[in-house]
Image 1 (spheres, helix red, strand yellow):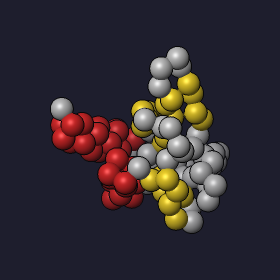
Image 2 (spheres, helix red, strand yellow; image 1 turned 90 degrees about the vertical axis):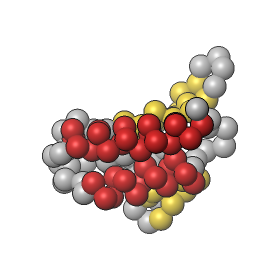
Image 3 (tube, rainbow, N blue to C red; image 1 turned 90 degrees about the horizontal axis):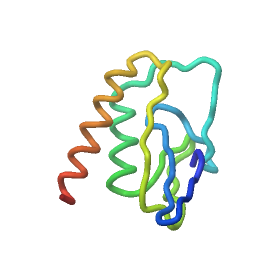
Image 4 (cartoon, rainbow, N blue to C red; image 1 turned 135 degrees about the horizontal axis):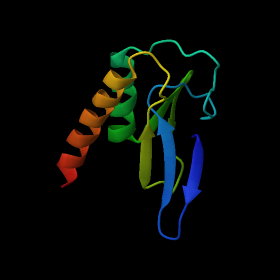
Length: 100
């Protein structure tokens, strides 16, 4: 995962819906970002929310132990960012409605 932050109450993790992660779960930063198809973002977010797994370039990894909160981020300089953000928000809203 990208970075793990802890406050006094709950561990939290930041995760990017539109960037790639190494097989070990580290964020892969590149100077140039290719467009990411919405179906790829949808699959990654769905897997994260429903299965608590992150998608890596070689498969999947479970969320780190103890992570109970997650910030889902979108990189701002990828083509189609607004559509990606709307897609992510829709998935999060649907997921959160199940637990309301």
